[in-house]
Amino acid sequence: DVTEIEEKEAQAKQEEQIMKEQELSNLLHEKRYLKALGLAISLDRPHTVLTVVKAILKEPEGRRHLEENIVRLRKDQKEAVLGFLVTWNTNSRNCHEAQAVMETLLKHEAPDSLLQFSGIKSAVESLLPYT
Image (cartoon, rainbow, N blue to C red; front, side, top):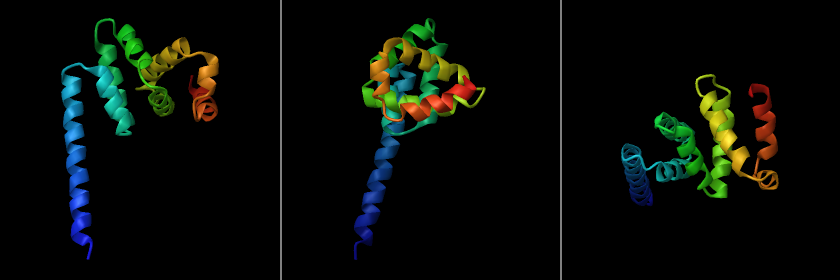
């Protein structure tokens, strides 16, 4: 019977998830946005990433801070953010944040580099009608 083992594994995963949520909350409170972005992306939480982006943009010189943080993300993290912003862009409440992130990506990534992103074709096709 492996039921007990599976329950312990599920409980351990749940506890780990709670710890990461707490860490994310602490990072936002401490305004450590780069780490917060990385953690939210690793947790695959588009809404949380959006919350971090909104918090950055509320800061004085928010655009500059957003650029600094987006530029420092790894390629796989930038790909994930691109996927998230496609969804954000379809909602008028979040389109400004999506456009700010898109502007940063377009400004700081070479076209050849952008073409290497996974899902770039579908992202561009999805962004065009709303942009």
